[in-house]
Length: 272
Ligand SMILES: [Zn+2]
Ligand SMILES: [Zn+2]
Image (cartoon, rainbow, N blue to C red):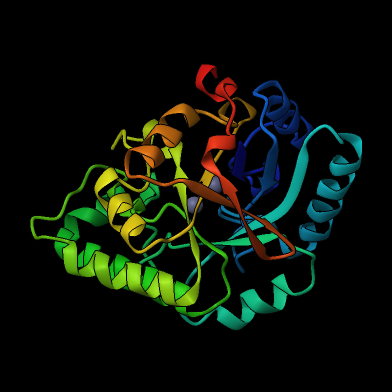
């Protein structure tokens, strides 16, 4: 089993040493993990959102050194980049400098509003929920079309606080699935939604079912911001994938996708 969405204390809002995340992954009997801390935003450190550009080399070398120290588990070098229209060349310039195995593209901002940040919760009161959803899925499609990302992160994060649209999402979802397919991105089954007010995995069963119809590959991620969260609720993530008839998941190495059988996941995961 893999956990491809793991943060570190470099971003300013996660706790625990990187080595503790690795030890927890070994304890959970994961075969492979990937660190995917927040790629620097220009003012990210100041707001405790991301690491600083000059911290990126340390992050990369720490992952490399953990890889050597813990040969019993495969450790991948990933990164989670915020997709904000206009910052494409900034992202590209940063990611080509390092040997990333994969890049997760995440939409956390609609215009300049961090819709998933607890401090910006009041922003929801000023907006039409349907319009927010529409804009969110449009940004997801745009993020996939940049070809900068291998994986699209938590692809219905917009539901985090429980806001739900009153209109059908079907057209937006189908359009998004088609774009994901066309650009060859994977999506993640991210269990952190179970620890948030919505209390639901990202994406929902309904959305995942549709992506399955379009044969969009999946990875698994906990979005751990503390070592205890590594591999958390993966029994539920795997059963969700199976429920909508996924038979495979994917891994990445040097930004190349590899297919793995879901059957290969041992029963150990079910007793985490
Ligand atoms: Zn974070
Ligand atoms: Zn995220």
